[in-house]
Image (tube, rainbow, N blue to C red; front, top):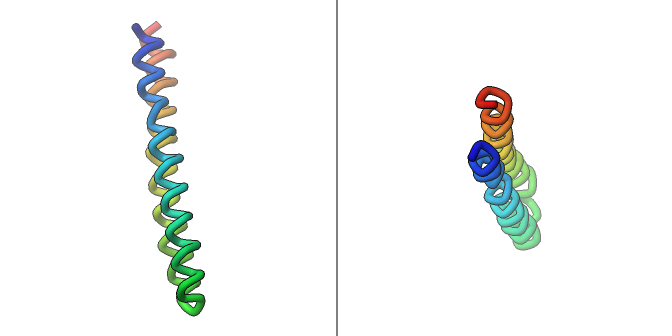
Amino acid sequence: MIAIGAAIAVLTGIGAGVGIGAATSKAVESIAKQPEAAGSINKALLLGCALAEATAIYGFVIALMMIIMLK
């Protein structure tokens, strides 16, 4: 049961990957339409990607804690 719980916790990486991919797609699209706004778009993109990646890291840490602490 511990392994199943840890596997579910690690699944947050899928959501983060999809979110980062969608955000990058929209950012590239926006830069193509309005190149003069590239600086502000990049700042917002990096902040969003960092927050999305943080959720994946939290899921991974929770999975590790479940495996180590509940054995």
